[in-house]
Image 1 (tube, helix red, strand yellow):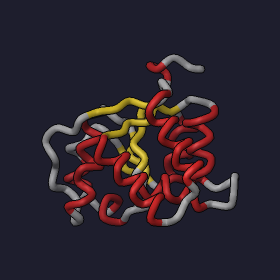
Image 2 (tube, helix red, strand yellow; image 1 turned 60 degrees about the vertical axis):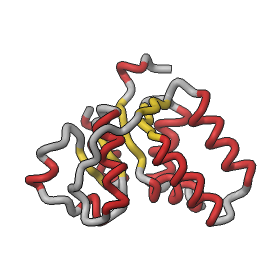
Image 3 (tube, rainbow, N blue to C red; image 1 turned 180 degrees about the vertical axis):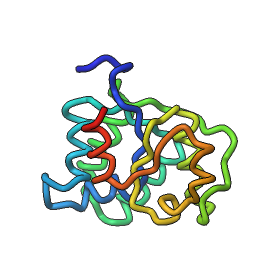
Image 4 (spheres, rainbow, N blue to C red; image 1 turned 30 degrees about the horizontal axis):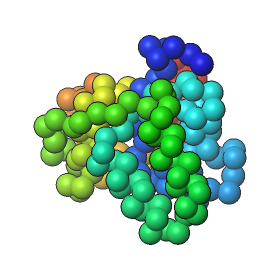
Length: 149
């Protein structure tokens, strides 16, 4: 496993986690991101209590099996490939106030990337994005950027 300082710190928005659990393709960009994180351990997931609660709440509402949810809980609770943070000041950059805690998690965890499919996050103005020390990218764009690193 690469040392922590060599892993890329990322925040996975809830839609990415849900996309992984609903995907039937191991070749999708989202599945490849999970492979980089969970199996190859090249990514360091940044997570907050608010984010993990949202992950599990949505997974349960979508009737993802209890076993799969428990496996994710174990991953998030016990592996060194996850950094748990407490968000500080919540920015107000997103059109959707519910997304601002995702930004706060990325800030608190010093993420390099926030990976999402959420238009409210992707459409944040360039001026607002300059305030962050991380990039907000779609999964396929993230994979291209990681190849550059």
